[in-house]
Amino acid sequence: MSVNPQPRIVIRHLSGSKINQVEQFPLKDLQEITIGRDPSSDIAYDQRRDDVVSRRHAAIRVEGEGEDLAFSIRDLNSSNGTLLNGTPVTDEVDLLADDTIELGAGGPKFSFDVQPRPESLASRTRVMGALDATATRAVAAVAGTAEHRPSVTGTKEIGAALATGTRESAGRAVVGKDTVLRMLFQEREKSTRIWMSSLAAVIAILVVAGGGLYWHSRTVANQIREEAAHRSEQARADAVQNVSQQMGATARDIASKYGNSTVRIEVAWRMHDMTTGKPLFQKVVTDKKSGKYYPAFIRLPNGKVLRWLTVEDPERRNIAIRGDLQGSGFVVSENGLILTNKHLASRWMLPFDEIGQGLNSERRGILYPYAKKRRQKSEWVSLDSSDIRALQEWIPQFGYAVFSEKEPVLLDGNQSLDDSRAFNGVNERLEVRFPGERLSTNASLVRASTDADVALIRIDALGGLKPLELAEDEKLEVGDRIIVLGYPDISPKTEIRLTAIENSRISSRAEIIPDPTVNEGIISVLGQKFRQEGAFTVLGTMGDTFQMSVNATGAGNSGGPVFNAKGQVIGLFTYSTNRNKDARATYAVPIHHGRALLKMKSTGL
Image 1 (tube, rainbow, N blue to C red):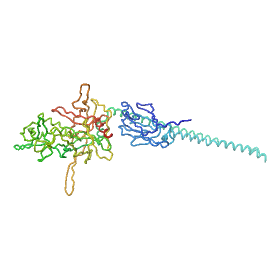
Image 2: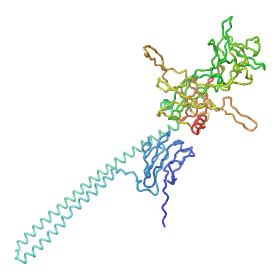
Image 3: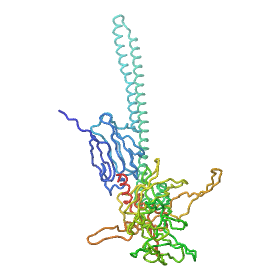
Image 4: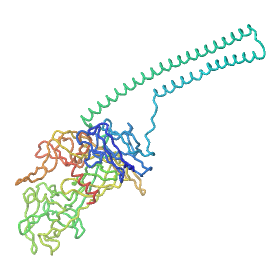
């Protein structure tokens, strides 16, 4: 009894780290075969040796069953593309038996087959070359020669008929000698003509064959020259590609390829008291003698100093717990997800350092003792004192005590001084603008990281967005070349001035047309994130960041992508420092913090 073998897909590796290997995949319940350097891929390539292959490079899809089996391949937005029989794959295309797939130009190759092969799955039709056409014509010429040969047989038949005629005539009448000689002479002339015709046909065949051979020789020579030129051109292209891969993408390449996926972000945020729903302020007092403004603070009975926070602003002079910011971000999905800095999209999760430093030239404030029953005498306090400077570390999202606007007492008399009221941070304006566009798109906060200065926002997109490729291995080393895109305030701006007539009124306004700035440098220092080693705690002063030599940028570039030489995003530009007029330094947050937010989004956590 025979057993029908289980149908399976057969992958024969022709080059790359898996050369000469054969992988088989049973078709039962098989829907897709993933290809890439990700260890979880069905066809997994070597992380180091096959660096032309992306982590998620391509996928083979299986549809139907039995005689209705069909196969297709698509590229998964890989860095170097996928080629089917030498043709780039730009969309999902059919896959047939004996097709050759190449993962990037000059990358690993393998052939596709199905065994046992279904009758409905045939190989692609082979296109005949010049050599085949020549061979066909040569055979036709020889066959044509054979068609002339029956004429010789005809000569023999004529001779036979002549002999027969002679015998028949003998039965009826006697033929004379002269008649017989004349008939023999005529027959000899006829035979000579036939042989001459045959000889001419042979000569014609030789001439045609010689011409065909000459044409064939020239065709082969031309084909050899073309193949040699093609191999030379391919070798040159491979050499250029190898050099390009070793040197990496240039700043011009990065700006040209990914500039349109780097966006300008504008934010206006405010803090609200959740109990009353009102916005929060820090009280400012007017000195009646000098007319100057001074920030107000309260000293509690235990000696602790607090900001005088209130929900009222009757004279429109109090310091609002709010801010206006501008920065950068970049697209990470086709449906509108954008990565940026937390201090842009969720500013209330970081310290609020505004304490009224610019209200007066003396850098002073007024300190009021907490007086529940009787108001006591206030005193001057320097904004540079340790008690006041410590207030700059206050993080609004953690809440605070809220006091009456008129007296240094708690707004809620039933609340303890040790309790903090709950606050709510709101982005009153969160807008995204793409390069070359004068219209902004509203965005919303998806989530912000609690581990690093990274946040995820979303815009409503109808598709067509080009996401940047995030580095998977993220092997950062000091001295690695990096390229930064963004919208620093220091860069020149392109403005367009518009005049409009609405409701019979003329209005004019200026709009900024974003144009990303590109900077290039190296990784200078790798920061140390918090970790515990035995009895010791290791913590870098800048946390889990890396310092860069990109110093021609600054505020406004926050949230912009930092690329490696392969054109992959390895981090987010976060901030720059210039302490005590020392040399300027810039820092970036590793991209694994951004991938963590995307992973949480995809899993619904």
